[in-house]
Image 1 (spheres, rainbow, N blue to C red):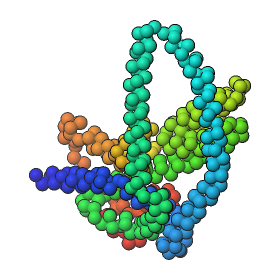
Image 2 (cartoon, helix red, strand yellow; image 1 turned 45 degrees about the vertical axis):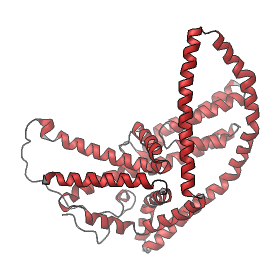
Image 3 (cartoon, rainbow, N blue to C red; image 1 turned 180 degrees about the horizontal axis):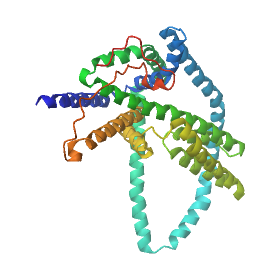
Image 4 (cartoon, one colour; image 1 turned 90 degrees about the horizontal axis):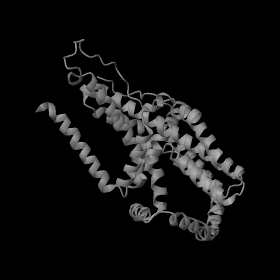
Length: 387
């Protein structure tokens, strides 16, 4: 019975954590966003702290620089995006007229060639898929409305998130040391090793993929604008933003840009040029950006990332989207650890392994931010020694 107590303890803790997320997810967005910002900026704060600055001053400077950069980007992009949004609104009547005058007659001509049985099957299939799409869209809009009501005002998020990010960034090392002191001493080295693996996976994916998104967004927006494509800036930025979900950004951007090019251009070579931009962008991403910035060892498969993002958004809204990748990283590391334990156990081997003496755990210092090992991180001087 005693051997099962730790398992019951962790399962109860996991159940309580999931329940709290479920009950409070409508008001957690500024806190989760602040935690994400603090996590991303902690290595920079560590570097500045090593130059002799107090931790509070390093956290303040890093956070102010981040906010200033985001504000400048918004100020520069907003007028351009506003002009293109107005252009979209002005072009909408022309698109509707094209659908009525050209697309629908062609579609009716194609349907007229089908047999009555095929038409009936097509009608049933369209009805089923249309109902699914409508219900999914309604659920999405309802979720956005609930999030909007819970947040009360976008201004409140903009005010709360920096405050949360500052205090977490200032106290990050202290929080890590405190949590490390709570670890069960016999298993502390193993837990630290898994936490470092989670951090390496998460930091490698999030920081690397965010850089890839920015690079692709700028590349697509600049290239499409240079070709003269209508709404090229918006399409390029959307494609770059959605590139956080592997392959989705390129596919969505390709479909939107080629569709607009078909409306806008009569020359086939111009349409091919627009399509070629995304072919080149996908090639650069696959052979240069992702291997250099994300790497092949992050341990997060693209399908697993897509499933996590969709599941998190469906269950907890935008908060679930923010938590999806960290949770996916934790689950992936724990599954790999459990698989290694299974492959070395008698359940897999069928016989007791040869005794090789008691296990030896080398001392492992606690890092202020484990991912900072590769980005200038350092262990706090007063970190408790590993048992």
